[in-house]
Image (tube, rainbow, N blue to C red):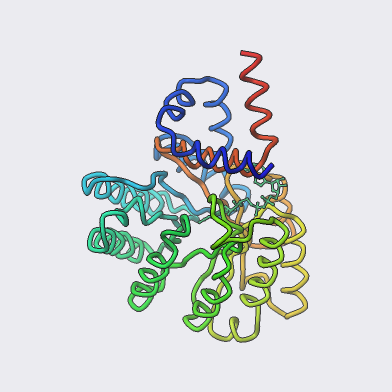
Length: 310
Ligand SMILES: Cc1cc2nc3c(=O)[nH]c(=O)nc-3n(C[C@H](O)[C@H](O)[C@H](O)COP(=O)(O)OP(=O)(O)OC[C@H]3O[C@@H](n4cnc5c(N)ncnc54)[C@H](O)[C@@H]3O)c2cc1C
């Protein structure tokens, strides 16, 4: 199924298909499974619903790779509005941002300025900001910016992808810093020069990186791991390992995506774990949706069945 994954990730950049998908009823219905809605008020409602189930959230205003300063400023303002809405409604939620949405492609000055505004506003509201990790072309710039801001703000965290060969070195550095690290497998189509082509290697590396994040050294430096996967064998491994290491349930969390394995999300809460759902919303849902299709062939088959029925 790897070619299928690559195909869907390539199509995630197609403007033509974006327009077709937006106008196609069954696809739009499926989008609603993964995306809380197009408007901020729908994201707030989704977070409130999770809150009632004891699930924390990280809300994300969708968008990436903006191509003008105006778009980057608009996206930043939307993010500030999101922080405001979370605070006003007293929601148990932080936010996630993508640096290419805040202007990373246009050089460091714009993204630095926009991220600064986001972090300052979030700090005032006592909210946490997670910087999502994008494709490998952006990893170094993202980690550099994270480190620059970490010197001034402690309400910020970053993401590490286990499919990248470099990630053990990056985790070692984040352990020195005592950072909050979300660990994921990685959602982009990466060449074999930078990422493991085989899923089994990505999974094995995920375990290696969890071992580092749960190590005595990491715990002593204040590292807070967020284990972000729907893979039950990795989740079980994390539970067992944390227990063996004497790490309490307060010292780490599980993260899952909105609309995926919701039963598992509730089960983990029942077992006393901290669980956070990534709640995306906004009009720019197309690339996010295509990455979710690429992750699971069954999603594509479901969509195809509806296509042929309609
Ligand atoms: C909270 C969170 C934040 C993330 N942030 C980032 C980020 O910043 N950068 C980044 O590159 N990636 C990010 N990801 C995505 C991640 O990299 C993976 O692409 C994604 O989580 C799928 O991998 P998996 O760990 O669930 O394992 P997989 O082995 O892909 O899946 C395990 C099982 O989970 C279920 N599942 C997985 N995906 C889906 C789906 N789309 N639809 C239905 N069921 C599914 C299936 O039952 C599957 O068998 C994030 C993921 C999460 C959960």
